Image (tube, rainbow, N blue to C red; front, top):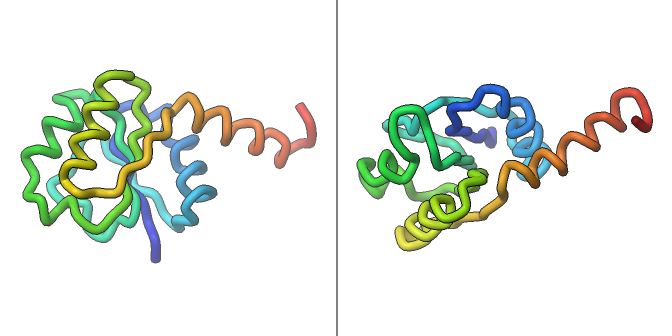
Length: 122
């Protein structure tokens, strides 16, 4: 089973991010957490925001052993311009596959489809 892990401390984003990951990458389940976990387990996709409650995603990822980061796709959904670029660059330097897809674009891609699918044109 393909599943994704979303790291974001804004629960109001969870529904949109979950719908996006399911439609874009065909994941069957999505797990959410407000901070970077010690281990992403068997997650196939990890979607990251830069600013988290306790620290940044970059600071937290740097503390993890490299083998815990390997073997998955990383989506940087942060809208924090320079900081998101720093996160994206660091992940690439670790030899990881990274896609930058800001939350603002994700929201525009997901919301209209959802509205049309539910009750016709809005």
